[in-house]
Length: 144
Ligand SMILES: Cc1cc2nc3c(=O)[nH]c(=O)nc-3n(C[C@H](O)[C@H](O)[C@H](O)COP(=O)(O)O)c2cc1C
Image (cartoon, rainbow, N blue to C red; front, side, top):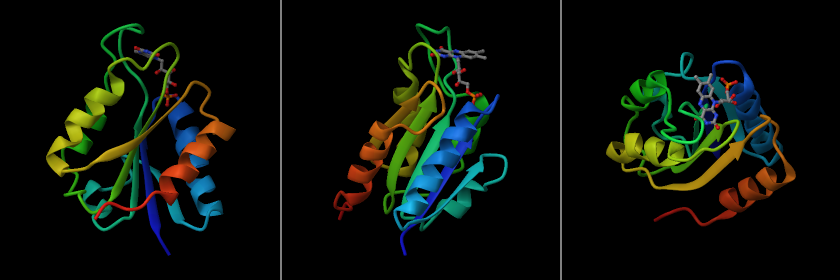
């Protein structure tokens, strides 16, 4: 059975709800998936996981300078080599995600991860479009 880890940083619960919905959806698709906050998941335990989905709420000046919270950056800095995993990013926001995903990717560069999915949500609910994106992502041929 393929494994998935959905790990998030949430301040007021929106990103946590989204992460839990993603994990539940992946479970419904036959993947052994779990969601945990960065406080509860040691980054080293992501070694060997097939699908790694990393999320953080969008922090910034609402129209510019969006970035992951420092706690997420610090956690991501301890991630293992992720070249063998499929890696996705997600965020929740109110107005615009702007530079958010670019900044998150920058923090992952050291891990060798190739990020091939970005999901964003205002409400924290998993929409039909999110489900379609996840289905296509999971079905895509893994990188050699
Ligand atoms: C200090 C602060 C800065 C924020 N900056 C942005 C922003 O730049 N762009 C945006 O779209 N939303 C911004 N938001 C809204 C949050 O990203 C949004 O409410 C998010 O869903 C919160 O996630 P959480 O409930 O998991 O903490 C900001 C919220 C706060 C509290």
